[in-house]
Amino acid sequence: MPPPEAVAGDVVLTADMATSDLSVASASRLGGRGIALAGLVVVAGVVLSRLIGWFRTAVFLAQFGGTSSPLDAFYAAFRIPDTLFQLVAAGAVGSALVPVASALLAGGEAERARRLVSTIANLMVLALIPLAVVVWIAAPAIVPVIAKPKDPAQLDLVIGLTRVMLLSPMLLAVGAVMTAGLNSLGIFGAPAMAPNVYNIGIIVCAVVLAPFLGIYALAIGVVVGSAGLVLTQATAVRRSRLYQPEIHIHDPAVRETLKLMAPRALGLGVTQLVFLVNTYFAQSLASDGGLTAYTTAFTTLQIPIGLIGVPLGIILLPPLSRAVAQGDDERFRRLVDQSLRLLLFVVVPLMGFMLVLAAPTIAFLYQHGSFTAQSTATYTPIYEVFLLGLVAHVLIALMAPIFYAGKDTRTPVTAALLAVAVDVIAAVVLFPFFHLAGLALAIGLGAWAEVILLVAFMERRIGFDLRPMARHAVSFAAGACVASAAAYLVARYVEGSMGGPSSFVAQFLELAAGGLVGLAVYVAWARVFRLPELSASVNLARVLVGRRGPARTEPLDG
Image: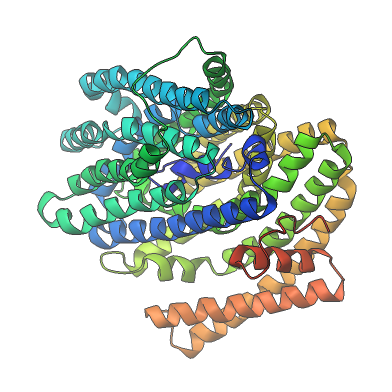
């Protein structure tokens, strides 16, 4: 299952669009230098958006607290408009529209590509308007089924917030089509920055309007941010003459796009069942703040996925896509093996570091304003359980786009459906015993189920041997255990020396000292055992920070 898009307007909303930018057809239109530069632009946008997304969450918690009933209401209310967006647009647009539009452009059919983008955008809006009207009218009946408010006042609040945010799915759908269309034209700057404007709009409204409007300021911020996401791309769309108020439903390209979108939209729609179920369970807890704790812990999990997984996927996807386009099965098999090993080399120790440093991480990120040390103690165990699925989520960030690049949207959807089934069943079984930690564990189990199925499909399709990768993974895990133990001991020593993590500076020093020592130990481990992934990761880091020539875009395929 993909990382849950848009938990309370999270910037992950556009992660699929970002990773689909460099699809096979799009990549074929750019030279090596162009692919690298485009990749760096998208990486910068994704990384910045994750950081701003964290800041947005920190602002929410600082203003309303970690056990906030109004914040619970906001997160519950967002579930319904987000579901509408996921069903109609979301990642389905990027994974289907970009390859088809790029193929038209590559064939010299620029006008047909523009008609395609216009048609899809208009169809999105026409589909969402009646859905939003129905939800507006039926909100009093729908909300109690999904959110389970604790009292009539809470029910009225969730209904009101839901209705305010119903405009956002239409704006976001238009923004998603804009992103896909501009990427097809090789324009990446405005689409990469648009999610940041989205989050900034929410933050500004939260800071400026919350003292007067309370929690409604966040709902208004979602609409303002959605409009900002569209306006950020509007100039580029106008200059490229990408949009016209027309619909060409009989164009074969439109039909092909809708056909490709259908499986992905189904997968995203079914995926929403997980979040609807988890929202219901989290809201059913007797104490306030359950849904806020669950959502914040999950949002924190998305930070390393955005900072590590998505950028790695964007940088590694072009060479993989070119191998698919050229029919070079051997090279594709070699690149897949090397890419997966590199991801494991980076993410396995990262998961270990984050587990042993979970408490100071939560304190450093959120323990400000109304968010207290007690809130940190409550959130940390939930976050730790979420981290058990980190490796799986990052692997999905690379593996799913590989299938999309070959215009295969069915295989990832099949795996996502399995993940949904595992998620829902595990949540129903685990929640009565472990509460929010049970929901977090269910998400991780679903992600691992999806990875296993994707690996099985990929192994059968390209025929690579998993045993060498498994042996490497054991070495990575052993090194991660040693390095994580060192990080933990150093962090505890720093905490004791400073009398506890009571200040922002103390929390930062604890994290920095533990992380740097853990990293040094892991690098030493890799050198002692001569792991080739160490040099590959250094090369990739140089690509990400732009310190090596952009023409080289295959850090693993030497």
